[in-house]
Image (cartoon, rainbow, N blue to C red; front, side):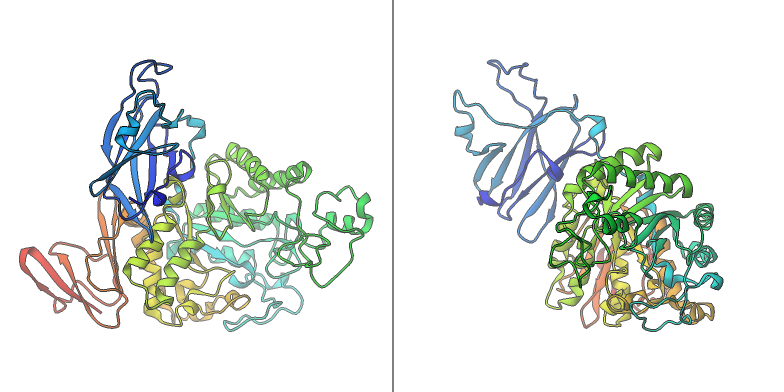
Length: 590
């Protein structure tokens, strides 16, 4: 048995409370392990100090597992009677059996040796206050990300100088096209008709750039976008349409023209804000970027100096801004830009405050990597699930990858965090920071919809980037921030694409299995590039097939089934299927 491949600890995603009654326990092993049993019970069953009585617990086999590239991930759910749990594992590989405790592995003889004190894994107490809770509404939400400057120009009277005519082609890094809040308000009926139930807005507060990530005033909507009153009206109108609203919180840094930074530039170390930023060399001089280390900034961007979110005064200042946003605009969540660089202590303070103002407020971090340190229940609810973005894209990028590689990559994404976090992960395929999905798919519309089909059937909360519903093209920044093609949409030229997206969104909203965290890969089609997976819901199951081969394949289905979404095959077209033996229908999937 490969003992080095086996891992468990009583913390993080390996052992945690799903709720007040259920305890999730996960263990990772190599592929040589055939069976695992968990032996568990209350720590005090043998007396308070143990005494002479030997502790023993209930023995149950762990059945549920996910396959990873080099490991198997085993999962079980326990319901400890007294909210405490003491446990160890019995692991089988062919004829070999080992017992796994907190301090290592033992044979049966070693475990039962007289005088041996065993170091059991122990969950001391499932305290309700320590259970990681996430907003239940997020799993039911279909998000729509809006880059305000390029979505819709609703009020040309507030356009910035040198605004360019609205168009749908390539854009420049510093172009302005006049998108504003009035334009977003005008399109709420469009979003509702599409099926959207959540809007994520890129920054809307005063700033000199088109992207607004260099904030000058956190309490004033940028005049070229509108007013504070218009932002509140947008939220109210969205709520009336059944749509939640999430703003972008840019707290890692400010703009170069923020009054606090200007005070630091003017007064140097004598400024009362000198410790609000991360300055390393005085006096501060202008330069090309911040690679010389004179102060820290977002990346090396000189015009975005980094805030010191370890400073209690900075924390209080930003907490006041969050409270102002919630009180003034009635927003439902915040997405934190550069969410892995602000301090953990600040994030804990944010959660403590926001959850008392709105207990279902959604806290989303922009983190592109494994984020378990931020998702333990006392900081973010969720992160932008870029690992899933990569897992989906890679299967189509690397043509030599087979269905098992896809399974491994997807399973990795949903074994990194708590189950309740998986329910609210922010799943996306493109954004203002990536090239657009249609570009990633090399303009192949079939691959485009295959990837969207995966997005809409994964646990979590799917998000489409504005324009993706009509396959808007665009490379990397700034090309991914093109203007929304309203003239083509209004003329009906993109109705077929809108119809496809509406079907996917409707499927997501009406079929509970789409949202379920319970899924597995049966690998029932013996073709390397045919993906198949089963989503198991409370009332129904959903089977997904994606033919990524270069030829038609045969798919066996039960005689009684319902097609929920298909682009290349219709259940009504009876020439595609033949009834085989035992009530199995063979369809030919293009």
